[in-house]
Image (cartoon, rainbow, N blue to C red; front, side, top):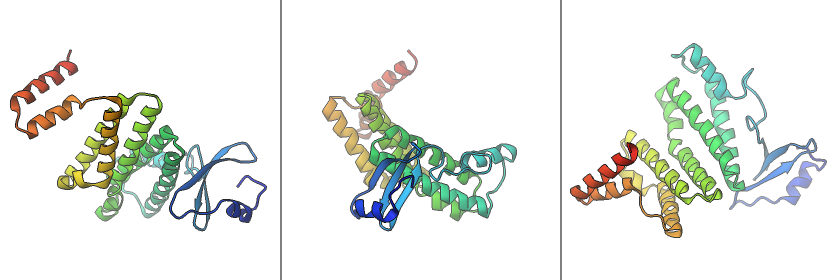
Length: 244
């Protein structure tokens, strides 16, 4: 682990808390930073650059890069058992590091790892060996989008840009809604716990910073309440903004 302390000493000095995620940045004896996550039976250690396990996939830095190279040569390829196994490994590794970055409040890094996972999901969906394997991963897409939206919004707040944070939240919510629609589950959208959390964060930021609803939100509300004249005026405003 890059330290002169034995594993027994580390575990004794860092007790496991089953009710909280325990993560820290640790500097090894070679000077590099690594992420350590305390788990029930020990410690997970992850690299901060490249793949979390510090390994490569042949001549490629990650499995995603390798699969994209295969896709470029053979656009219709189907993933084999080894590729599916390695994809599951990479998904899990990036999940652990993503939640670690969130806990450490390194939000831009959490966004990067979420983007990697979403891109890997795209490749796996497009080249999956069967529908069951596809669904086993696609079911987690809203969860990854939730993390990405949350992280990107908090990164904007770190830069003192509340308006951007709200815009990020609105865009993320719309993307998640589209996923629910795609899977014919739109009626579940507003009751989803992740959606509720993002809406609460957006609304709390609006209240704290005195930022009103966007034109799109006003339009949606006008259509919902059958205020069609107002809806037409809002569409005109949106069109003028897009084509000044």
